[in-house]
Length: 114
Image 1: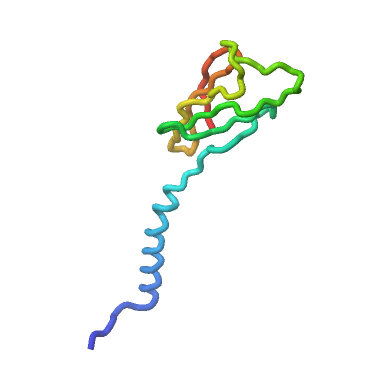
Image 2: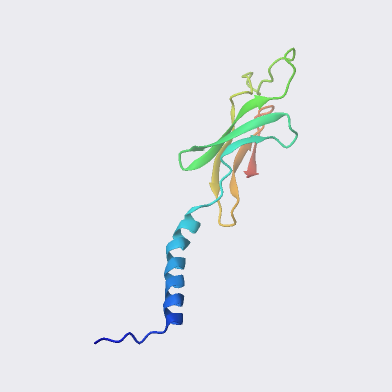
């Protein structure tokens, strides 16, 4: 008859190694993303971050204002609510997302990190 020459400790190590190989790709593919709805730093706005092409974009979906206050507008006179202000956010090796953000009040663009 055939006799198995490997020890039980070897089998346990081999099983753990194979299990590690099977879970590593799954963990590597699960990167944290900023996709979701976020409150601005000052708490007066809400921005929805969503996929757009091979990047992420963000648009204003809520503005804290009184019902009697006029809707804030951008530099071109368009209502700020609904404007896409974050564009081209892409993941970097360090786990951050970098792209651009536009200030709707003056139309200037800045580098943004999510």
